[in-house]
Amino acid sequence: METIQTIDIATPITKTVLEVFDMMLGLKIEPAEASFESELTEKRIVGSVNMAGVVSGVVSIHVNYDFAVFMASSMLGSTPEETGESEVKDVMSELVNIVGGNVKSFLNDSGLTCVLSTPSITYGTDFIIETLNVEKYEKCLFAKDAHPLMVEAGLRFHGDQGSDAAAIAAARPPIDIERINALDISVMLSDFVPTVFETMLSLKVSQAGAVYQSELEGLKIVGGVSFAGDVMGVVTIHVDFVFAQKMAKSMMGMADEETASESDVRDVIGELGNIIGGKLKSYFTDAGLICELSTPSITRGKDFHVETLNLHRYERLAFQHQDSYFFLEAGVKFAENLNIRAKQEKEIAYEVIPDIPEQPREPTPTTAETADAPTDRKGEQAPPEPAGHTEQQPTRLGDIFFDGKTSLAEKFPDLERTLQMPTELNIDLLMDVPLEVSVEIGRKRIQIRDLLKLREKSLVELNALAEDPVNILVNNRLIAKGVVMVEGGKYGIKVIEILSRMDRIRSLQLD
Image 1 (cartoon, helix red, strand yellow):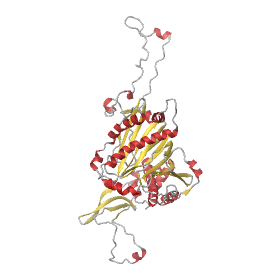
Image 2 (cartoon, rainbow, N blue to C red; image 1 turned 120 degrees about the horizontal axis):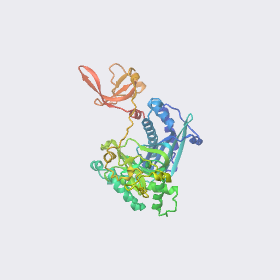
Image 3 (cartoon, rainbow, N blue to C red; image 1 turned 90 degrees about the vertical axis):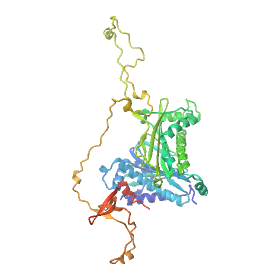
Image 4 (cartoon, helix red, strand yellow; image 1 turned 60 degrees about the vertical axis):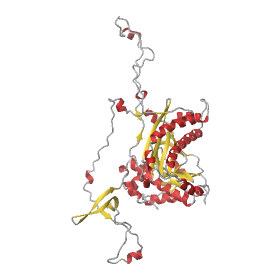
């Protein structure tokens, strides 16, 4: 069996990237020199997929955002102007899923078993991504004209678990669907996180019902771990750099005047993500699901967003320690064969309040102005306002107690909110474009010699059953599925499912 040190993962990565770009995007991409990494500009996007098991780690694809738009438009058959941000994220997610899937298959074939998490997307203009505690690291660079593409892979070996696989499977409890459906992630984390902070960091934190907009901005560090197996997903903790320093010093018993190193801060944030993720993992494994945790990763910078796509459940909570805030995200996706109930909407357990600038105080009146000052009923000048008088300062909404349950609209009925409505699109010019609609009831791959044997009344067996849905194609592109209907002696097709662009792309994936 190969070891993590001797295994060659650069070769399968290179082979997969070249094939994917050629077959799925119709683009020729070539390996590039290491110096080409400098062509990655500020505005970029990274697709990542984590793996867990005997080997854990991450595979990620880095490209400039404008090239990502070009890649997505090539894959979807649209123009860059027609390609939206959500489509760019979907294509990046699909590409890294294919590359990561091929790395996983290569590792499994080498005896290093692992499973994949659901992909995540990081995008912005200022960020660095690091995977902690990896033992093997590979970086592969590619180029399409002047556009760079970088694939990173970091792996860690966790020992030979194969001998215990049978015992683990035998000890695994039956899957308890009711318990999984009953899980309230928000309630679990709102109880567990304060306990972790008080026990490990000696810091008292509480759940925050509202935060200022400015708390979501500026320098920050995000630590995360991913789930893989029957349940996939991610747990991330978002902290600003000042509070991250305080957390690290508290956990390591350092004095206030001391400064924790960057590696210490990363380790503390990563370990907290590992502990909180481990709490959810224990719940799922106790309910009978296979669930593995990846090695932690750290993203830091001042302008970036981290997003995990296609989750069944998503929770985001805010916590507060004195004047410092931090955020916790947890999202999971269950294997389709489990038929576990999904929640379509994201659950955000706090209000975001705009920062209201304080009005400047009136200048201190001069002697001449004092003569015109207002007088009381006795004709004497009114005394000056006492020091600290705040009548001129508007009350900030965040200074009012929020319990996390009552919305701003209920507390402030007159508070106006403006929603930006999408612009209407005029597609009248497309209405008269003719399209060819065809129906495919099945397929059959045969060799040339069998094709030459076909005669009238020859029987060709298809790969579909009689009751299977038929494929509906427009201009030879799969867009829907349907069932055959017969009415009045005429055939028709009843549409039962409309496929998204990404579903059509997935049918073209490499084996």
